[in-house]
Structures are given as C-alpha cells and as structure tokens.
Amino acid sequence: MPAPNIPIRVGVIGLSTSGGWATTLLAPLLDSTSPVFQKYKLVALSTRSAESASATAEKYSAQLGHTIKAYHGASGTRDLAQDPDVDLVIVTVKVVDHKAAAFPAIEAGKDVFVEWPLGKSLEEAVEIAQKAKAKGVRAMVGTQAIHTPIVKKFKEVVESGAIGKVLSTYMTVIIPKENGFMGGDTISERATYMLAPNSGATHSDIMGGHLISGLISALGPISSLSSTVTSLYPTLELLDSSGKRTGKIVTRHNPDQVAFTGLLASGATVSFQLTTGVTPAAKGHNTFRWTVIGEKGTIEATGDSVLYTMVANKITVNGESWEPEYEWNYLTGPIQRGWDEFAKGDEGKYATFEDAIKLHKIIDAVAVSGRNGVRVDIN
Image (cartoon, rainbow, N blue to C red; front, side):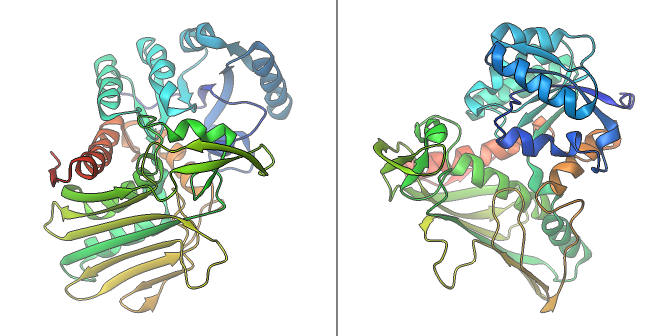
C-alpha cells in the first residue's frame, strides 16, 4: 500500500467544544507547535446534535484558519464517512458506540482510527477488525502506552540482554479514590455508563488494557492467566460536572479490584494488580510500579501517573538511574508519536486492529477467569 498523501485529511466523530478525551487525543493535530501538525488536516467533524456540530466546527475553523464541515447524528456519521475530502476517520466516542461509528467509515474504504477499547467485547472487536481487513483499509487503535519512553526503555533493555533471561515481571497500579472517572466510591455523572456489566469500559477494559498493552509490547504476549476480581465499592455517589457530590447513589455492576497471575509466552511469570479507592494523600503509595527481573539484573519504574502515560518519577536499570525524555510533553507525547508513525504508511510502527484483538483476548481471559474461577489459556 502506498504511503498516504500528506496532509492526511481527517474527519472526527466525537469532537465537541466541551473538551474531554477527544481534545487530548487530537491535541497533536490541532496545535501548531506539534511535530505532526503539518501532517494532518482536520476537515470535518460529526457530533450528536446540529447545535453541537455547528459550534464545534466554528471553534476549530477559527482556530485552524480554514472551514471545517459539520455533520451530526447517525446520518452525519455516514455522510462524514462518504465525504470525498476525508482520508482518515477518527472515532473517539463511548466504546458502546465504536462499532456504529467505525463501520460506515470502513465500508466507505476510509482509513480509520478507533480509541481503545476497539469494541465493547472481544466478539465485537473481532467483527470490526475483520471488516477493516476485508475492505483493505489501514486501521489503528489507540493504545498509546506502546509509544511511552518507559515501554521503549524496558523493551530495549530486555532485548539487549542487559538483565539476562527474563524470569518474572509484575505491575501494580493504584487509581486514587477521588478520581471521579474510575476510582473509589464516587463517579462523575458522565461516566455512569462504565458501571454496566457489559459496558466495555470497566477497570480491566480501559485501565488494564492500556497498561497491559505496554507490558506485552516490551515483553511479548501473555499465554495464560488466572484472575481474581471483586468489587469493594458496590455503590457510588454521583459527582456533578464541577466534581461536587450530589447525594445520588448508583450501583456498580462490574469489579473495581483486579488481579491476575500468569505466564508470558517466553515462560516468565507475570503478575498484575489494579487497586482502586486509595486516598491520593495516603503516604507510601506509588500509583504505578513496574518491575522486570532477569537472571543478571532488574529494571524498575515507579511513578505517580497511570493510564497510557506511564510517567515514572524513578527508573533504574540494574541499580542505575535512567532519565526518560518526553517528546513534546509527557501527556500527549505518546499520542503524537502514534500519529507520526501512522503518517509513515506501511513503514509506521503503530497498534493495529490485529494488535487490539490480542489485547482484547487478555482482557476477556481476565473476565472469564474471575467469573468462573479457572485458569484460561490465551491463543
């Protein structure tokens, strides 16, 4: 497949004036200081309502200095996908809407980006990936952790043989209690959809998926696992748009504590634990810790940032400190790198839909094992 024409003309499903994740995801494409700004051009967007679409298009038309087309609703998703001026469709909506947003773009033969998780279930993710493969479009999933300095360093150290044969690895993650998005006994009103049993947006799906993508990028696939999951916060209080408690109580229908042990394909053991509900001010806690133990040494990272950024305050390789370098900035640097790789065409190194399926299989195995109390092999 030939390299894409530059700039790649982009249509976005889910961008609005209210900010949110879409704004962060698209920051490298909308900020003139970004290294990839010249490689992409926002030309169209689609939101749920005509008012929102018009306001968002007006905002970014003024910011970027050119007219951006505004589409809205289900018909808008189809019209954007069929727009001859659009090369790449970016899907950044709730995971339950990923399939409905991505399918028209794929059917129209457009390249497509879908934020992680690819689908609300393994089965849906496979369906989306198969559709993209059948149509021959280029497709990227948003597992930005693979582009972080930490993952790159861990992979480099392991492949260099500096720590010898890998024997084991463990990763622990803490989501602070006051994080209204996913942690503890509160949740923002806009995130309540995540509490449903099959939302595709559980702790395992989102947080687990992003972090595990980094782990397997550096160390290779997980071949089997056994998980333990539970919910220590079965009810939660809603937070309003300003983050204040409302007194309204909702019920959680999926786990808020996740742990598993297993084997990498290499034979090394792997351990992962995700804990929610810790007070941010609690002493002695690192929200992120990742260690790889080899026959000849150890590499370890600890820090205060989770999700895809994996920002570490301290990284040691065989006892010696290593200082990571962040491209552009630590938050959007990994995202920028992903866009840069995608712009290279077939030569780019980015997470494909096939990579997403491998990750979905791990997340599905965690759910099956936790639900049935069995060890699960991952093909």
